[in-house]
Image (tube, rainbow, N blue to C red):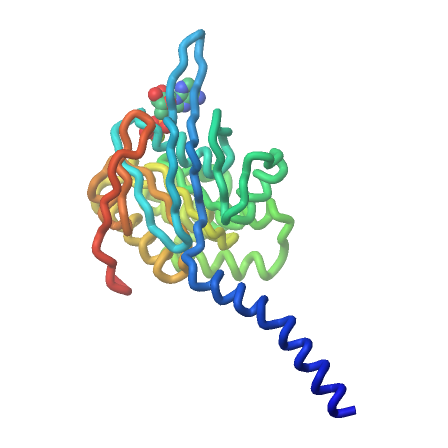
Length: 264
Ligand code: ADP
Ligand code: MG
C-alpha cells in the first residue's frame, strides 16, 4: 500500500514539475502591461485626414512610470485614449497584460475601465454636486459595491492623497491642487493596475504640479502600479523612469532616468 502511495506521489510530482517551471519562467520575465504593435490612428474630417498616431510600437512593463512628452497636437492624448479604449486604432494592435484588445466589445472596455484602468485628466472632471468622498466612492458604486467596505476604501485613499480633512467639501470649495488629489484618489480607489494621466499638472501652478507628480511617483513605488503620464512639462516628465519624446504622432527618442530612491 505504501509502495502504491509512493508511486502515485512520484507520478503527481512529475506532473506538477513542468507547471512549476512554467510559473518560474513567467515570474522572472518582466510583465508587459501595455503593448502597442504598429498602432496608427487616422482621423477623417471633411475629406481631410489627420494623423493622430503614426505606426507606434512600444511596450510598457508592469510597475513602470513612463512619460510621453511632446508639443500640443503630437498625439499624446490619442495614445492614452487608445489605452483606455476611449478611441479605437485605425490599424495595429494594442495588448493589455499580453491580451489583444482588437476584438474587445464596448462591454469589455467598460469592464477594463472599471477594473484595470484609472484615468486622471487635466481638468479634474469631478462631479460638482458630490463631496470629495462621494466623488471618490463613485467608481466603486458603479461596480455595484455598497456599504462599509466602500466607506473604508474611500477613507484609505483619501488619506493616501492627504485629503481626509476635506472629505466633505464639494469641488468648488477646493483648490485646483486639492481637486486633482481627489481626482487621483478616484482614479486609484478600485486599485487599477494602470493609471493614465493626461496633463495632470496642466491646470496647476508649478508647486502644486510638483506635488501631484510626487504623489503619482509614490503610488508606483508603494503599489507597483503602471503609470503612463502625458505632459508637455519637462519638469513633470523628470519624475518618470523613462521618457518617450513624441513628434507628429510618432515616438522619437527614449530617455532613461536614474532610479528614484525609495521615499524620494
Ligand atoms: P496632444 O494630446 O499631443 O495635444 P492629440 O492626441 O489630442 O494631441 O491630437 C493629435 C492630432 O490628432 C492633432 O492634430 C489633433 O488635432 C488630431 N485629433 C485629435 N482628436 C481628433 C478628433 N477627434 N478628430 C480629428 N482630429 C483629431
Ligand atoms: Mg492632449
